[in-house]
Length: 94
Image (cartoon, rainbow, N blue to C red):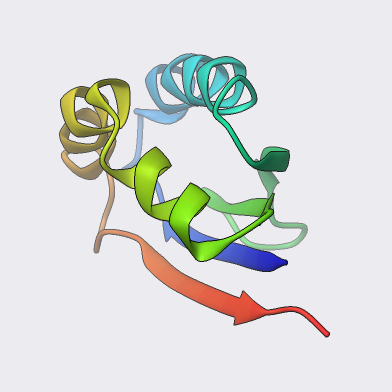
């Protein structure tokens, strides 16, 4: 099982745009093979900070998700409204 947590800070004034786009990521990603869970939320006590929390059956499933047409087309839209991009962490769950 593979876990992913990715953190980011959204540029001031882009919170609604970010959340609308993230809702599409959540809906789409949950349909991808091997997706056990896919969520995103606001980090408590940190202004404009968000965290993605994901669980994938295998690294191959995560790789397929990252290479999907949806991800390739929409990830740049997320990146452009972030302060410093995504800090992505992949965890091999015990």
